[in-house]
Amino acid sequence: MGQSMPSGYSSVTPHPDVNRILSDLVPGICAVLGADLIGLYLDGSLARGDFDAASDIDFVAVTREMVSAAQFEALQALHDRIAAGGENLALEIEGFYVPLAALRGPGAPELICPNLERGPGERLKRIPLGLGWVVHRWVLHEYAIVLSGPHPGEIGDPITAVDLKDAMRQILASWATRIVDHPAVLRHSGYQAYAILSICRILYTLAHGTIVSKAAAAAWARQALEPRWAAGIEAALATRLAARGDATPEQTAAAESFIRFAIGG
Image 1: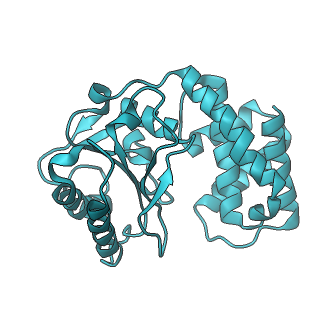
Image 2 (image 1 turned 90 degrees about the horizontal axis):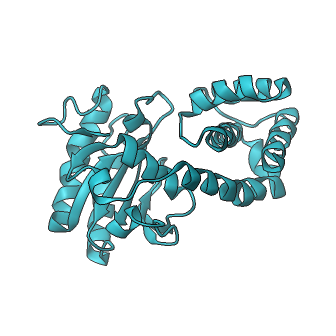
């Protein structure tokens, strides 16, 4: 299960840059949402303990009801201020503001909730939680770092291996199929690396019913899958931590073949 936040913010995580962001982000969210906030949690690689130079700061705020228009505007201003603050990781924050219903039962992937993605110019927006929300729920239940409120396991339902596998099959049938229908997106090496490593994670989950880091899933895939895919997976791992640009036509074709293999598999 997850960990409760120590007093102050200097040791919430082993990463000082992350802790400085949290020292601004956490009180800001608490101030905006007040009594409507049930819990605030670190998600993703920080929670799982595999945060690295290519990772982002993933958080989930759970509220009693949907975020109001006034709260949305105040949260938008908070995130804009942090993004402009000059911290190294100020543009590497990703998060969701979800009602308690999103942690219970099927989790209502069609719920439209405020979301922030990493990157320059990104701002808070409302989007459907989508099929990938089941992964966030699983990580929260198993690994969440609690910044405020009760542990997610006390207020939400667990996600089973069957739930994870069902979601991965649906993601292959939707997101992965869209990529092979429109393979031009793979020409950018950064997105290509993201797609290949995401496919490795999906295949790992289908095989094992659990979630691991991209690096761990890639290591598994190099051993478990046919040798012909190893070079592309290695290149994706290298690209994830390196400067990005256009992929070669050969790399793009190989990535498309790998995704087609995963869909057909």
